[in-house]
Length: 112
Image 1 (tube, rainbow, N blue to C red):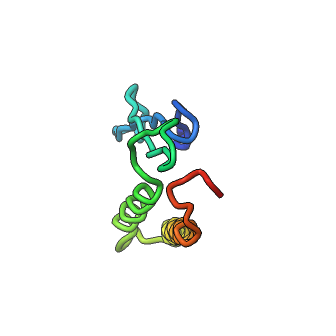
Image 2: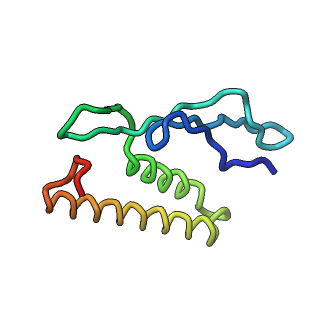
């Protein structure tokens, strides 16, 4: 079985390379290609480092949709259902943190 949890860090906390896989008659195989994923970074109070990109919530919501589309009919199982539940819980906690930071006036900053 190949290690499907690996990725390469380009810039810690903001940019990563994910391997691209293909499905062959032998199973899943890693190609020589990678996909760069950049997360949005920055601070509304300063311009020391800004980067356009995706946000964590986009990735998690996409994973919920993807796993839900697979977890149907005869393929539905407790493992995927639990994974979906945990990702949805992560989304809930991220949203709760965002509401808390907004209420305190520090959303979009590096202030605590």
